[in-house]
Amino acid sequence: MNKPGEPVAGVRHALYPEPKLPAQDTSQPLAAAMTELHAKVARGEVAARAMQGLKSQGFEPDVVVIHPGWGEALFARDVFPHARLITYAEYYYGGEGGDTAFDPEFSRPTPASAQRIRIKNTHLLHALDACDAALAPTRFQKGRHPAWAQDKIHVIHEGIDTERFKPDANASVQLKSAGLTLRPGDEVVTFVVRQLEPYRGYHIFMRALPLLQKLRPNARVVLVGGDGASYGSAPPAGKTWKDIFLAEVASQLDMSRIHFVGRVPHTALTQLMQVSAAHVYLTYPFVLSWSMLEAMSIGCLIVGSDTAPVREVVEHGRNGLLTDFFDHQALAHCVADALERRDELAPLRAAARQTIVDGYDLRRHCLPAQLALLETPHQVGSQKLGPET
Image 1 (tube, rainbow, N blue to C red):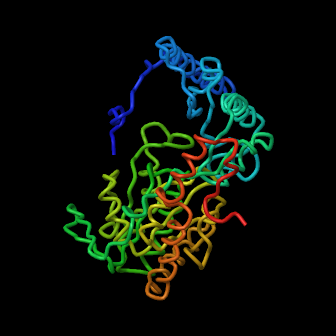
Image 2 (cartoon, rainbow, N blue to C red):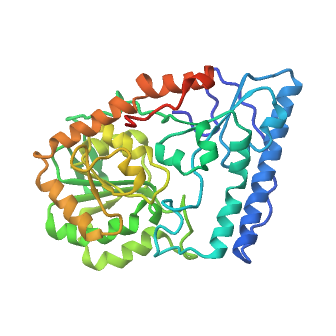
């Protein structure tokens, strides 16, 4: 895995300078949204300048693949008008069934928030209009986009290396600070996110732990994730979401059986999921995390939130278990039951891995579909990520 900024063998890197961004205006919601849009335009301008530099050297690409999320796609069509333009349709904000106002504890719909979201989609709309084709990793993400654009969007996941992410009966994880070594067969509950924040259900998971510890007094809980915020609002100044929700339940917990390990190398994360007895994945209706699919490929027993992106992959009782996102007591009971019936539920673990092998395997499915989109985009048709019927 190459580090950010590290050159990839055989790939020419043409970097553009960080644009001078406007000061953040938080005086009122629409002003903040306009400041954010200004930043996207500034980034699009410097990216276009870098592309124009390549063009002046005689470079004329057949295909341009671009992520529009930060504004780089805004002027790509103007620089390379004859290239096939493919954008990444990662997420379109607003509308029913999405992340906006999903969790009333943190957000409620208001006229101001609707205006902010409309501005937030501006640069994404430009990219959808200009592109010849787009790709989205899941059907849920495709379905968030406007109806007029969906014929352009091909559902092709980035792909999971199922030979790398697979069960290993000999895996082990050392928790040095606790003087423990965890192995398959131990009663280990895992929770893995980029950041410990509400968008990925951290608050719900923490509220489930007091009851879970009562139901399973030998269970050890390992939480992977940073202290920041990748999605949604930042915590109050001087605090972290991690500490806020830990403090809410700390007096009810045996902290000797709860292990916060921060962000860990991918190899260590893989080994942790290989020793997991129950892997909890919670999310708002938002972008689906690779970590859940990697956990399924490893053969984890998934206990997931009954939200649209998770339901697309996990079928309750067949290849995992689902609970209501907001019901922390139901989550505790579901995890405890999964631990109690671990042997009985072994077919769910096998089915989870088979789901990924059959529909998300990098080499057999996703990479060939990605190459087909690049080479013959008008003849590909909408690719699928597992059965759509």
